[in-house]
Length: 139
Image (cartoon, rainbow, N blue to C red; front, side, top):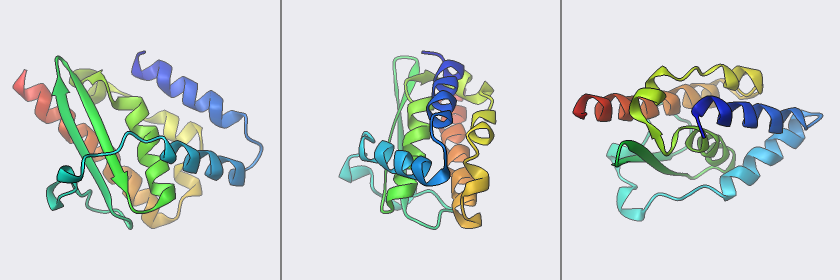
C-alpha cells in the first residue's frame, strides 16, 4: 500500500470514534501491536531526542524499502510511534521524504496531545525523515 492510502485508512479508523477517550484507547491498542525493536537497538543513538518518554526508533533498508521498528516506555507514546511505523515502514525513502503529514492534523492527534507529547510526535516524524534522507543519499 502507498503511504497516502495508509494515511487515509488511519483517518477513516479514527473517524469511527465519537470522542477522544475512545481514540486514546485505540492508540494504546495500536501500541500493543507494535513490531518491537530488538534489545540490541535500544541504545542512546536510537533514542529520539525531544520526547518526554523514552522512544527508540531503528530503521533498516531492505531492498529499496525502509523497515522501522520501535519501542517506548509509555503506552500512549508507543501507540503514536505505532501509527507512524504503520504509515512509513516498508516504504521507499523517496516516498517517505515526499509524504504529506496532514493526516496527523486530520485525526486531530497533535491538538489532543500535551505540548511535550506534541513535540515528541514532531521529533518522531523528524527521525523517520532523517532515516529516509540517509538511505536516499546512499541510493
